[in-house]
Length: 101
Image 1 (cartoon, helix red, strand yellow):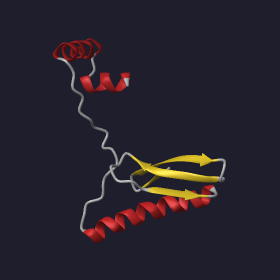
Image 2 (cartoon, one colour):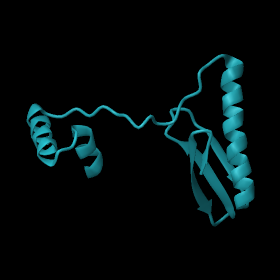
Image 3 (cartoon, helix red, strand yellow):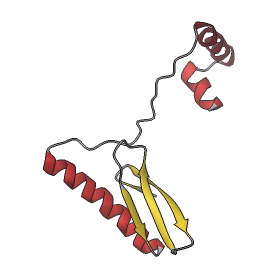
Image 4 (cartoon, one colour):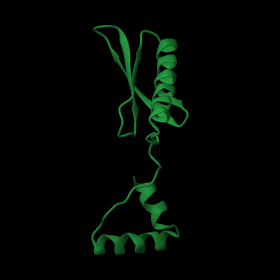
């Protein structure tokens, strides 16, 4: 589930018959729940909107979802080998690593 660039992860609790969700990829915690898909979607949007309003009220920047970038530290040997493999395949190092992940 996506809204304003935020992604929700959802689980169903069979014991209490309710959907529980959490916005993923943030340091902050944003949760939501609902008894139906319609309620769950509404609660998700409301939770994101409430979070953004709360941050604005406090004058803080809201935590942003993952940017798609991360730093990976490798040994020099592994780095060199991957660069060679990427060159042999005619792709960038980033393209090689992304395709393998």
